[in-house]
Length: 86
Image (tube, rainbow, N blue to C red; front, top):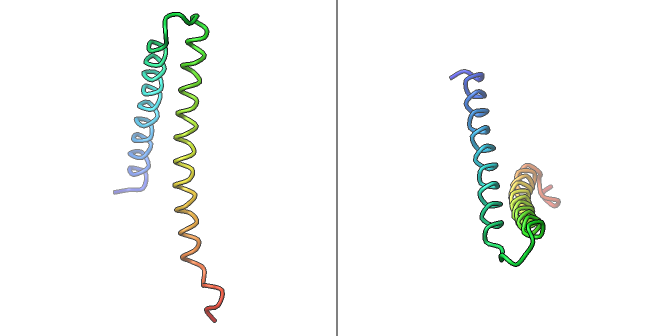
């Protein structure tokens, strides 16, 4: 397989992931908007649903950044000799 074909496939997969992520956010927003109590005003329900989505996205960002940060630390620590190895 050529590198250009691999890159084209990787970009296609990335596009599907981004579209899936946006659809998931939209569905979650609609769910959180509908699940609010009917006594709240429309703007309060929208604000609360938007806050829930932002909270979920920030949690996802923290989890993913922690995973990638740990894996990069492990890669660097494996390539460096220990301090007292000489």
